[in-house]
Image 1 (tube, protein in one colour):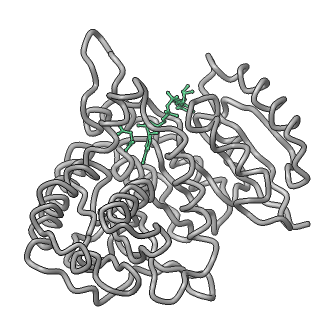
Image 2: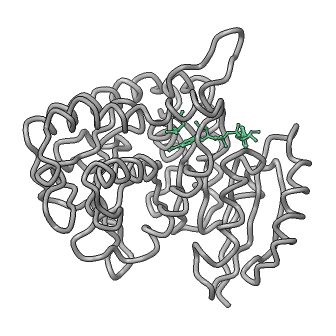
Length: 332
Ligand code: NAD
Ligand code: LMR
């Protein structure tokens, strides 16, 4: 069996609880790959991970390798092939008597976590390591981490796959089709209420989803805010931020990165902008991506954007620019 090292921060959190068994079961990295898992937590919580490790052992998966719990980020990410940065505070909680309402309000609280973690990854993870940031605000946390890592052979992603899955599910329901009919779902920009889930370029059995649905009022006035605000709706209903669906989206992202993308499809994640589609270089921005047969991750070019899309992409770009300014001291 092949062996890989996977590090997960926030190992005792609620997303991790859904995520970890699926990382070591053969489902994500393949039945021929043993996964050594490093679970990373803050010192106050790290002992709890022994319980998680017992449960992972008790699952009895033959792909489960060595399981380690640590509060030392350097030990956790050393020689890592994949690092999943989940550990951080979710919104919806009350801090100093004030409820955290928006993901961007987490910037000051969570941003600092990603400086040391980024530096450790840049120095110690494998030279071709892949890093997926789940902790919010995911795009700008990834920006901080990637800059501190300062290692261009590693590749950083911020998670927008949950938004893409939500966006597909809503279109499939409206159109009365199976979700498998939906392809090319692009989440442009930030994992925030300014994201643009693009129904014009998404396809249902090869035809534009917007054309199939043929109801621009619903698409623009109902569908868009529904997808953009889905995270908040889950928090309001559940009293905690999405966990099972977030873990599922993290698994989807890893699979999309390590397996070639099907012809005529794409996957959604935020990566560093190279200026594609006029997005300022250096921002961590949600783009249409594909993994080539050779395993290279590319931003798909040539997607046509109508005026509605351009206006929405401008808004989310401006938000990411202002987040970048807000953390200027952390990325310099
Ligand atoms: P949680 O509070 O249940 O768990 C977070 C865990 O992270 C805690 O156990 C905490 O001790 C740990 N942690 C905090 N700081 C850490 C550090 N420096 N190093 C290691 N671990 C640390 O939260 P959750 O529900 O698992 O959510 C985690 C994050 O994911 C939140 O920021 C949430 O907003 C975000 N999230 C993102 C998406 C997305 O689509 N990108 C979706 C859902 C949730
Ligand atoms: C989500 O989209 O469910 C997460 O980002 C959690 C949140 O704060 O909305």
